[in-house]
Structures are given as structure tokens and as C-alpha cells.
Length: 558
Image (tube, rainbow, N blue to C red; front, side):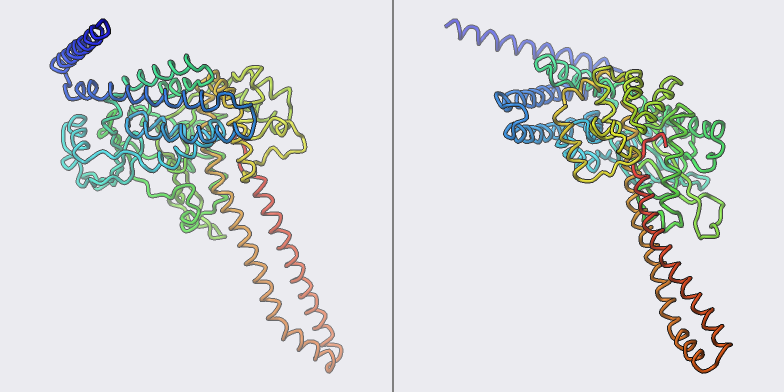
């Protein structure tokens, strides 16, 4: 009887709370300046909160109880841990797609954390997050244009393609043409990104704090901290436009030797707002598309050098760094108004896109970061510790920080016999690094939680640049080998074509005396030179491949 009374009382209280909550929400919507957005917040945020709570609880309890009682480092525990990582990654992936908004960005950020979070998370997110970005309908695009510029896109532009050229987590890009005939790219922000962003931040933070309180070993709070600082800047396209102009100005003032080699699209300020960005349309090849780069008359080796020089200047000279340099944000085109060189090559120009995420490095950070890379190259354990501590890693986790930077375990980091300018990136290397990431996951999350946000973004920049260099280097090795094989085959054909001449010379020596003897001597010397050329080319081929391998995945300071 008492139980029935309590149940009835609870039900009435729940109904009353629902009614009051609904009444408050209705009042807020009715009095809001933007009823549509307010309605969206009050109807979507509670649903997302329930999903977040359920997913977080499922992941936390799965880890806690699936691994309960299993001996550390045992084969059975590693097997179960792999299964839990996979299940949890799929749960998180489903949550990101169902909630949308900043959750998509969160999933994409996880997909870039190679060797920092377990491989199961990275692989799961990478397969889906980069290829299934949301697309805003054309009606949503027209509403945004009306709100931001006071007119529809077909009225503002001579031509406007309603089908986006590309879509990313924050925005999509449309092709258009102005009334004066200029072709432009129009970046249109997804409306759902800003409508519920603040509420989503608070929800995710609440869930992660609760999970960390219940299970201290699971600490993902640094992800929310990093996104809270960077995402508002990425969502303001006026900041992005200013960053692009500041970047170019830095190269003009501080790096004049590269001013013509680095470019950013011109901004049309009269057609740009915080949610719309109109800029010059650039026809270029993605930096990882080696076949297209060569088709346009440029060499991958020149491109790799240009990318390395550009970001070295940003990091160490400008202190103003583009922190999202993945392949889609780096375009390559031949230098405008230049002709081919004597060898038939065109000079490349690097076009930087998506300037929403920049970080400023003070002089102390730049100096310590450069000194740390120098210490890593020379296996100087004392200096590695000193400068890792100065950058925020702490005296207990400096070895782990060095391992994340170099993608090597500590025993190889301080091994003088190891070539520290090379990271081969073989399958065994990757497996070893992912094993360490899984084994030392609590320490890694601790490290990432204590590092300054600027260093976290530098780690992301390093990973992006490594991926770009990897795509260029392997193509370069292949092209170099092919070039030398072609040259060797050419000399072989030349030698074969001389065989009849050699035979005639031999016959001349037999029948014609002294004059033919001199002719025979000259021909023999020519053949010897050809053989020497063959040997030199074969050696050069080997040296070239080795040299390219030595330049693989260098740190950003080179």
C-alpha cells in the first residue's frame, strides 16, 4: 500500500515536472527573439542528453566489468580489451552521427589522434567521419543568405550552383560567379552547428565529468577543453578571413623568399559575414594527388620541400601557425605567369585553405620546441627531459611526450644508433605504436590533459604534415626508381645499337691497318664510357632512393 502510494506520488511529480518544464519551454519560445532556434534547443538538447548519458554509461561499464579480474598484460585481457575498444568506438560513432553538430567535429578530432587513443577508435572514426559529413539543403542555404546578406544567392550572384562542391563538418562550399564575371567559392556554415553549440558543450562536459568521477582512469575531459577553445573561432568566418590575410602578410614581411610560393585566396569582404565566406576560386591539385601534380608539370620533390619550408617558417619565424593542414586544405598549382624550366618543370605554388584554426606561439614556446627537436635528433636524453618539462609534459611523463612526437618508444628515442630523421612507418612500426597507445592509455590521457592547448594543436599539425609527406615521399621513391630504370634502359638500347658499329670496326682493323686501329680505339673508349654511365646511373638510382627514404616523415623543424 505504501509502495503504491509512493509510485503514484512519483508519477504525479513526474507529470507535474514535465508540465512545468513544458510550460517554461513554451514561455521561452513565445518570448524569444528567434523562436525557431529556441524551439530547436528545447526539443533536441534533452534528447541528446539522454543519448549521451546512455552511451557514456554503456562505454564506462563495459570497460569496468569486461576487464574485471583479468590479469594485467595477459593474452585474455588484451583480447577482451580489443573487443571492448571496438564496441565502444562503434557506440561513440553512432552517438556522433545521431546527435550531429559539434559531435561530428569531436569524432573527426578523435580520428586524427593516431598513436594517442586506441587504434580501434581511430580506425572506426576515420572510416566514417571524414566521408559522411552533413549536407545542408538548398532551402537552408537560402535562409542563411537571407538572414546574413538580406537577399537570396541567385540575386547576389550571376550564377550560383545549388549543389555543393564539397561538405565538411562545419560548412559546405558552393561554386558561384559574381556579376562582374569573377568565379568565386562560397563557404556556407551549417545552420545546426551554431543553434545548439553552447548547449552541446555543456552536455558533453557534464557527461565526461560524471564518467571521470565514477571511473577516474577514463578521462576525456581534455577533448572538450580543446574544442571549447578552438571551435568558436572556426565558426566565425570573419576570423578565418582575417587569419588568411595575416598569414600572407607574414610571408611578405618575414619570409620574402617564399612570398611568391605561398598563397591564400582573396576574400570578398562585401560578401562575407560570420557565417558566409566568399573567396577567390582556386583551381589546384590536392597536395596528396601526386599524379595530378605531375600532370600539371610539377615535381613531388619540389612540393614536399615547399610544404616543409612553409610550415617551418610559420612555426619558428612567424609564430602564427595553420593548425589544420590536412590534404584537402593544401592545394598545389603551377606558379602563375612563369614558364617551364630547362628541364621542363614548373615551380609549384602552395595555396592554403581553411584558415579558421590558427595558433600563436610565443618566443619561449618556439625556442623550446626547436631545442626539443634538436635534442630528439641527437638522442640527448638530458635535453629531451629539460625541454619537454618546459613545454608542459612534466618530469614524470616527458618520455611519453617524446615518444608521441617521434612515434617511437623511449628506448629508441635515446638510441644514438637510430636515425632520428627517419620514421619508416612500416606495418610493424604502426602496430608497435598502437600497442603502446593501448597499454599506456591512462598515462596518455593524463599527459594530454596537462599539456597546454597550443602544444596539443602542434601535435595535430605534426600528424597532418606527416600524412602529407608520406603520400609525397612514397610517390617520389616510385618516380625516382622509374626515372633511373628508364635511363638505364636507354643506355642499354644505345649499347645494342652500337653492336653493328663495333663489328664493322673489328673488320676494319683486320683489313685496313693503322687508320682503322685508331678508329677501333676511339670506339672502344666510347663503349667503356657507356658502361661507366650505366654503373653510375645504377648507383645513383640506389643513392636517390636511400636519400628519399632519409627524408621521410621528418619533424616539422626541418
